[in-house]
Image (cartoon, rainbow, N blue to C red; front, side, top):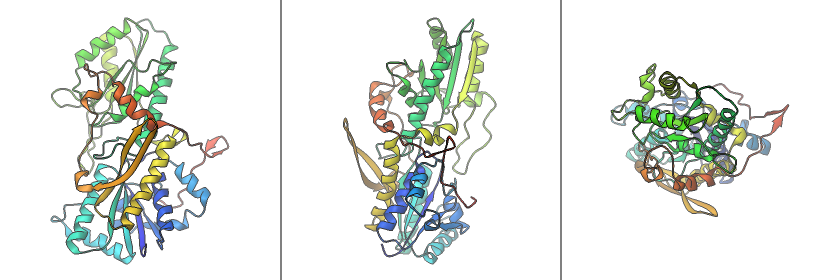
Length: 412
């Protein structure tokens, strides 16, 4: 590489997103980049000319190893939607002016669906104006909903956290006896795609039967059928555990969480903030049955659990970041790194790049055939797909009994 590289992180953080950053940094240096800049808070920060020279903050191999074990976005993230090119070219002129000033040869953006929209628009503007900078996306999202890739870095670690947490919740519930039983509703992230919630099945094993029901947003949710199934389960056991996606919806399109306190916040991409699904269902069950209920919202814990990250996930995140730099160095632009699964056993994948226009603003959902006919659990095909992604551990660097992270010396 003859010029410099700039990298940003966007969207929801994960336990593995900084491994992608490490992959970008190491590969860019190995390929001869003069400098590797980091955008503070993604494209939003770049527009405000907030960036850092990563060589001043990642100074040795220990820093790299700590970075890979640090959850959340080290550089800071954002949810900033670029305008359409025809709506406001001044935004693009400003961005490209900054890139030219920094002598940027490759722009790498680590993120999900909305982040790939940013890569698409910047690449298109570069083509329209004859700019030489290359724009490449590195996949990242715990939602696992990016098109054209077998899976996304971040998902494996979140799935591992969810499987472990649900198993521990099941154990807790089994220990307690209440006159009319106990029903625990576990709310898991997933607006339109149920990959994370389906991962509750990972709690299954010789020592655990797993949750009693799993509800994904791909299948319309029926309150009365749900209540009937809970009652039937309580006839057989004293503790019932149900995993639900935050985005489950009724047949008329309303989110279940909207039946409770409502949804107030909407982000720049028009996404409603979904919260309260488990709380509403727990109250509904308690009112109808009179049993003890609990609602548990895993919330940000499921994407910040670096202490139980999947080794496969962390390594693939680093691989994705490195592959993005290599693609840019070899002349690709307007593309995203994707994973193609070669085999399940032994688990093998390879990387390639795909046109970001076929990925941005699209969503890959759980196939209907990977959910049982009743819509209350995932199938063996889903389990075979997800289990390889959670294998292996990444031991934290422990100091005073608590995991050590790479400290960020700058503010967002």
